[in-house]
Length: 165
Image 1 (tube, one colour):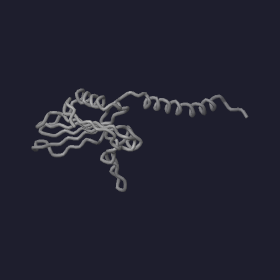
Image 2: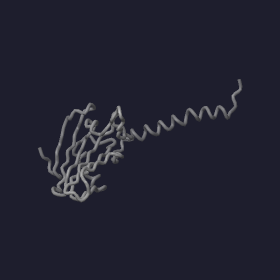
Image 3: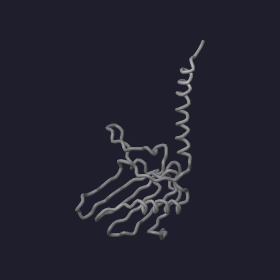
Image 4: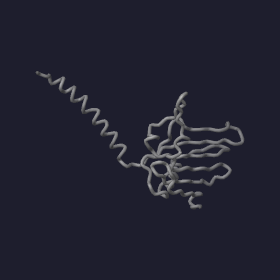
């Protein structure tokens, strides 16, 4: 049975192109590079502009976060310095999550009728938070070392650069 070279080329291309793309995706994930980005469609604003108090909550994904909690605190602190978040007359709360099987990097909230998937369902992947306000401009940092199941193994709390118990 003769197979033309074009057909053989198409078959080989159809097989090897997806494999090479999978290899690229795996190398990106396993490169070990730490990266932070805002999780789309998760910003929450409580209150209205011009009201006395406005609360802004933003949520971020941290790919390959450092295991050391002081390094993690420095990482999220540096991110906020490089990407400032401001709100007039308000409280700000930033949450940072690790990537997991339940919370992949492309996760999006789901408000389906029978199935909802919101960030509050993923507290086991919360690894850091920053809170501050116009009234109290000192930033409070909470950083966590968690097991794969989300159990807190160690927690550190900072007010600016001071470690508090």
